[in-house]
Length: 358
Image (tube, rainbow, N blue to C red; front, side, top):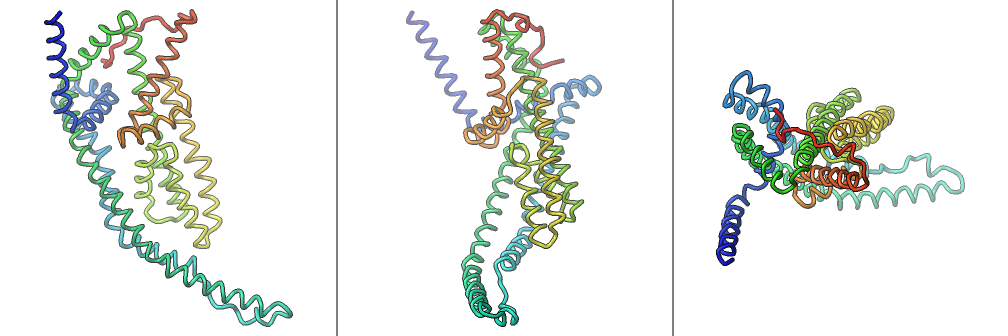
């Protein structure tokens, strides 16, 4: 008995030490695990043709081009354009809140013309004070934008570490997947294969749904900006693809674009962009995301939204993927357990499927 207690304490101490050592890299490790698992079928096809090392290098380079390069372009371009953005923001603010002097004919209107001219003059004076009060805050807005961009830039460092770790995960994915499957089988027994199948399909469906929706919405937003004549459609398309991983990310880009068109005397194009954004850009979120996620689990849209928002709140940027994945796995396993308990065994037949598919 004493030996078992000592062995348990020893193993607990070793586990605690390993966790403390890996804790600074936990975010990069989880990012690498999600990336490796989601792209494993593509890696297998590439490995069959080129070999393991070449395939791992190719997947690392491809992932960097698809994920890291667009973020780097967005950050660098946005930082370079920040002075122009600041000047444009100040000019727009001054134009919107500036009221010229009342026209001469206003005071000549019988009976109430002088009163209207007086009210107009008072409003113009008040707006002038408001302009002087608000213009200093444009600098704070620009500084906040710069701070956000620098935070994204620092995230690129973590992404680079994740890609470095993912390279070794691709190389040793077979043994890692086998070890994980063995642990689940020791815990779950005869239900292990079914659980592994559910986990694998849910993770892939969730990741593919989030990324696929973000890419499509980015392309559609860039196309909408190009059609309406807004500047930098490619840049705003890339920004949309980055923020569209959030359920309400795309409207954060096209709604200001529509307002800019309306406020710059292009109401027709502004209304067109609103309709286009609601029906086409945001509509894609209700088609593509459920289509991919349903391949792994019938996860309700509400749980997808709560998973993303709660995941970001709890885990930071990693929670964009980790939140929906955890909720998806939990929801599917709960439904599976309830179905088995109610006697519906048609869907409970064990599926012999590798956790990391060949």
